[in-house]
Image (cartoon, rainbow, N blue to C red; front, side, top):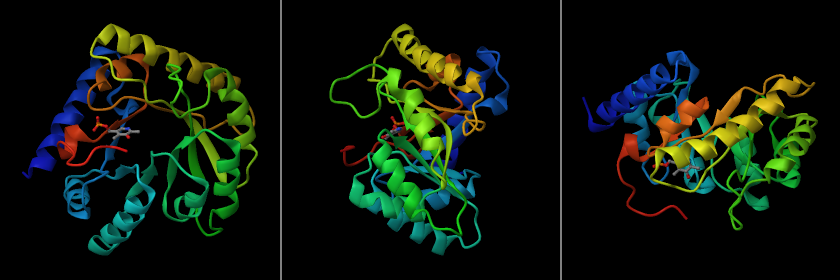
Length: 239
Ligand SMILES: *Cc1c(COP(=O)(O)O)cnc(C)c1O
């Protein structure tokens, strides 16, 4: 097995174990492989090992990688998730090339994504990014505003609202991780419980990375975003 295939098995093992410890079914949590900073070859190796969903932070890098991987693996049905900040001048690239976006925190960006989503593609699947621990300079809508934004985005014709995403500040203690993850879960449950028109598919809580996936799964994450654990350390830092 390649290192990537081996790492992938270990991460899937961690997810399965965390699900079991939390009394959740093993299929309750999906794995998004975060391939930012790694080349198309790394994605091809992970895809060969069975991984189908990939996350990218930097739009231009992601779009180039999507094209290269498509050429290397024609016919493969991979899913591409945008998990990085989106400037207005990048919305068209996102709308045309990605399947999911986890980082919608402004209506204006959502409106552009909807208007620019090509008619021959399925609706773009969207998570509302929430600034769950309230860092003053962080992306994400305030928790109190998440529902209003989700409702507004749900009205846009070419987007489908799928849930919430959060990136809590890193903290080494499990208890502290759990506290903040649990607040994300509560907000997610409150919105999901409304079962409003436009929010029928509100089923995704994108939460947890390499260092905190156990706490995130214990709290109720349905999708963990793992980079380092699969591809190794990144040689240039996240912007
Ligand atoms: C880089 C990144 C990840 C993956 O982080 P790791 O610690 O490498 O697992 C997950 N989510 C977002 C939003 C990221 O930017």
